[in-house]
Image (cartoon, rainbow, N blue to C red; front, side, top):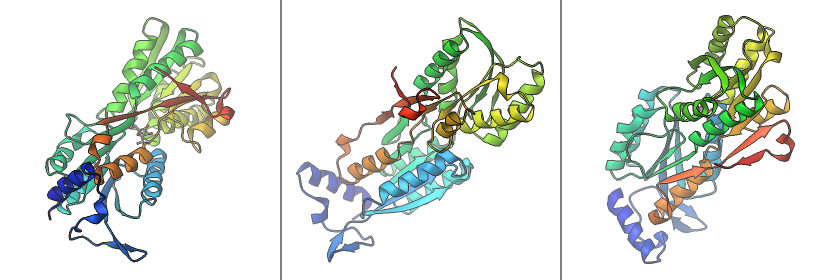
Length: 326
Ligand code: FRU
């Protein structure tokens, strides 16, 4: 039975309230469990860059959540920040006729590869960075526009409506970059807050550090930069370190996004960051959605699953941050 007709068959059985375990097995390795034959679901997972702390955590969470389901056979791949390598992952998954793909794409250049998988009848779950069009099964991510707007609101209140800001933006070819920037700018528009320097730090801490060094040398007077907004915590922390090297960190406020417990939240606790907004990676939801899709319960999976966020500051960090509402 080919994977397509198998999927169709699973859906029909689920509709009829029957278990997938009772149907004929596809020609795939089956696992035995206490003597019984079990279905094996082959999931191809492609991460765009495991070398970043937030993505390392996503991989760990995907792995641990998948491990709760004995039926899942997970193939994990790391594109090491190369979009072409990630496109090749998707092609390999299509050729291998995996049952489902989970991808956290580098940027929108992955759109055609994902569409090809979707057109081949493979369910695709996208995590974090969105693609163009609607050729995917499910997108899971937090509301970056809400985060951008909330950063703007926080900055406006914290600077009491006036001051000079450095904005270190995410990779421009990835949607969260504009989504975190435009609403931020809209929120500070009618104030005396000025953006004195901005740059694309490509989501990478090394690049952010260089850009911050440039911001400091273009604004050399002490007190000429009041706040740095890093679109992720690695950038905000790198900016702090660059300012510290220049002996200027004390004159600035630093705000970032991600709030990993051992990274951004820890930096707030240590007084490196003044604030960070949580950006959950959605790994648990991805495995949950994958299982539903694989068990033929497609109608239980929404096309877009939008996750919440939290603000962490030194005042609320010990209480676990505070929920942010639109
Ligand atoms: C990691 C990362 C996170 C950020 C997300 C945005 O690559 O930069 O730090 O929140 O991607 O897509």
